[in-house]
Amino acid sequence: MSGEQILGVVVEHDLEGIKPVSFEVINAARKLADQVSGKVIVFCLGFNEEGAADLFIRSGADEVRFLNHPDLKTYIHENYAFALTKEFEKIPVDYLFLPATILGKELSAVLSAQLGVGVATDCIGVSFLRGDEVEAVRPVSSGKALATIRFKGKKPFILTLRPNIFRDSEPSLSRVGEIFKEDIQLPDFSIQAQKLVKRVGTHLDIAEARIVVSGGLGMQGPENFKLLEELAEVLGGAVGASRPVVDNGWREYSNQVGQTGRTVSPDLYFACGISGSVQHLAGMSSSRCIVAINTDSNAPIFSVADYGIVGDALKVIPVLTREFRKTLSS
Ligand SMILES: Cc1cc2nc3c(=O)[nH]c(=O)nc-3n(C[C@H](O)[C@H](O)[C@H](O)COP(=O)(O)OP(=O)(O)OC[C@H]3O[C@@H](n4cnc5c(N)ncnc54)[C@H](O)[C@@H]3O)c2cc1C
Image 1 (cartoon, rainbow, N blue to C red):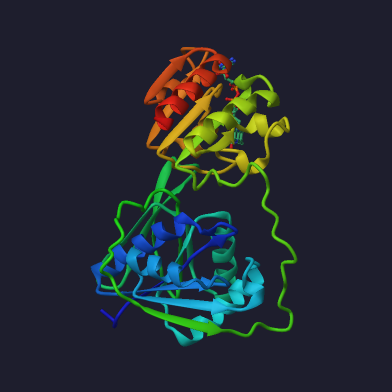
Image 2 (image 1 turned 180 degrees about the horizontal axis):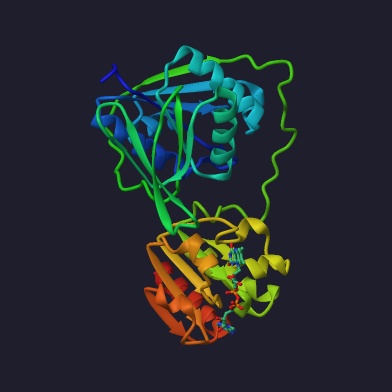
């Protein structure tokens, strides 16, 4: 083994604070670090709240580094990559972990290109092999196969972790760690975000949501997605869609689940009026529990569903929404 392994984590925040997926990534890094008595360093850019540091430490950080600059408050990949690259000149990070969110995937790609280091995206498993070598597992070929990845060459090696996979650890209230705050310089070309606009109805990203309520062509028209939004709201979930729904302009592309859309792994996935094509399954078959609602009892979606309801989604969904609302409010 070649000295203490340093595992870095880049956390993510938005207008509502630190994104929950960040704690999953810290948990995963902690578990790995414990295998080799390594150190977990959290990098938090443009967000400087004492309370956040405590949460990072309880989740497994040994050290929290707040990097402060007004232009880091809102994520811009040029500024984030510059700030992190400067940090890596001081701190010899061996492995860098980010969530496999839109931000994490973009930033990991930019860092990998700028630093000339390897990146494994959307990992669903990570472990140390002999001593200090990490092995990562990631789905390939639309989830039909799993690739095992090992890294070679220059460090830090970068991994993005799929949301909702690494979250079985409880925070430890007794953990202690160090906190550093640093006002950093950005270059003259530093880019500023003038305004961050929160888009109504899209606050919860489908890839991070623990419950996804998806609709397909069987929803008959865009107006009926209101039913899915109501169910998602009652359950605290997000609304997804099949590709033809997006192609028809009923929902935005960011809602699309499947081979050419997003990959989701929620606790609960509702497939409403979705036939269950292989391309759709590629994006949601790793969900922990799948509920399918379809008028056709032979629809392929039922072969992957844990619970199947043969019926008209337009009639079944309002009943489900009403019953969930009643149960959850009591
Ligand atoms: C290269 C490639 C990439 C693709 N990528 C994706 C992708 O990323 N994501 C994706 O989803 N697709 C993708 N597709 C398309 C995919 O092949 C299917 O065409 C698509 O998933 C079907 O969408 P759907 O289930 O909404 O529609 P359909 O297949 O038309 O199914 C509609 C279903 O609704 C049911 N239904 C009808 N009325 C009702 C009702 N009132 N209540 C309940 N059920 C009802 C029907 O029985 C049917 O099963 C891709 C295709 C290709 C070739």
